[in-house]
Amino acid sequence: MSAIFNFQSLLTVILLLICTCAYLRALMPSLLDKNKTGFLGIFWKCARIGERKSPYVAVCCIVMAFTILFSE
Image (cartoon, rainbow, N blue to C red; front, side, top):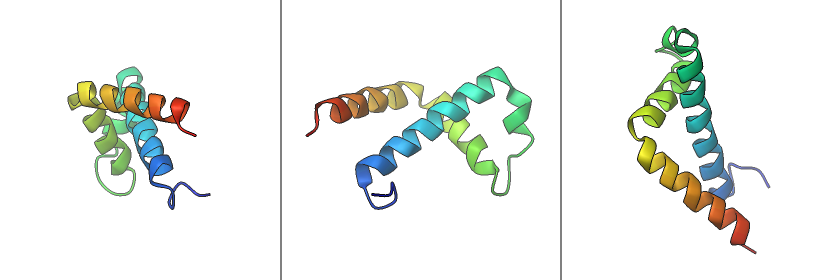
């Protein structure tokens, strides 16, 4: 089933996108900072969410990991 139709998969993809963008911005800030608007601005916004809300994102990642590991 596609990640669009499965809510748990959609949340997993969004969390992975946020974590990946925040990590890439930490390594190479100029890569995401030059595209703040338009379609590629989504990645810059995900990086900002990952930086500013990092404790909440970390808790969500841990909860998602336990949910995936211990679900049927």
